[in-house]
Image 1 (cartoon, rainbow, N blue to C red):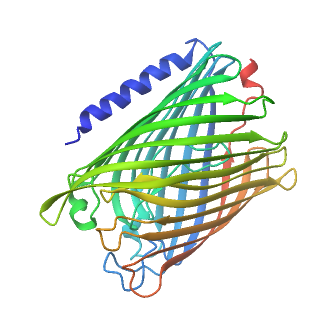
Image 2 (cartoon, rainbow, N blue to C red; image 1 turned 180 degrees about the vertical axis):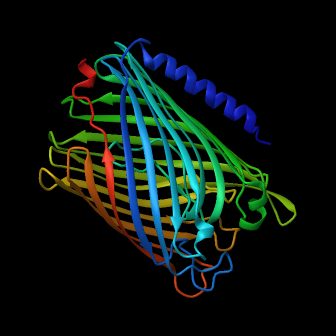
Length: 422
């Protein structure tokens, strides 16, 4: 089955290798930027559990104090850049019945790039050990710099405070063949493990996913648009149901810059998966095909940034399956004055699930409004409201939803200007 030790060893080697390539001169100065947030939150359903659910005790009120501290360590040069971001997040609840949700989580994220005349090497990687409360998210590597959250995959049921360890890395190589043609080779490896004493009760499973792909991209005549062909293959291995799923796909991609502020991209393709899984005491083999698409619009301005995308893809989850999902994401930030900035986040997911598994379909939606008021150059007052809703075919009664109000303060260290040109 899957080899966790080999996967983690490979991830460590890739991270170390990419770090050596990206760091450049060993004596170069490093930029260190701390970021600390202390918040008080009130949530009427912190575990996002449906009333009457047998998965866990329904907690109808949760008041907690949340501390989140990270340090970004960055070395940037004109031809290379590398960064590390260790992070610790902890919380404590006032209600005794909600204290079972308390946790202290650890994260480490790293990115690096080395630029040559015709070749660019890069990677993104992260490690996380955390408790899962509410909807679980997986994967690494942001899809767009304007989005704070990783490119995530929602699993098919809310978390019950399980402990999860995740290691992921995504390297890439970009080769400029000439002024108009570019070849990109990419891939990723994700290894996920759960605490062994919690797997049987929740239905989750350890899994390993590998992916490799290649893209040919050509700039069009006016240099404002480009067309690309991306082919890829993935392998997924889950432990509990001995699922092995091999996926192959192709995407046709078109992107265009409309102005200095606006750009958009669209793609269409197909994915085919061949799977073998243990269910009902027998081994089941089959094939699944699904069309895929993506459409995104991005704005980058001095006062506001926005990125929105509508995506359909076949993705893995922690329940031991690979299934199609439709997703919409919108991220928007705006600087309303010299001191005040606001943000809006919207996400909706329709996970089709697996036809042979009852209740594996799930819908999830979340909207978040936030405000950041700078009291000093490094200190800010932060406030936010978030509404989340989750439902499935097996939900008893109404769908699960939650409302969360957050107030707090944030310290963000000053960044060094013009780092790349120093």
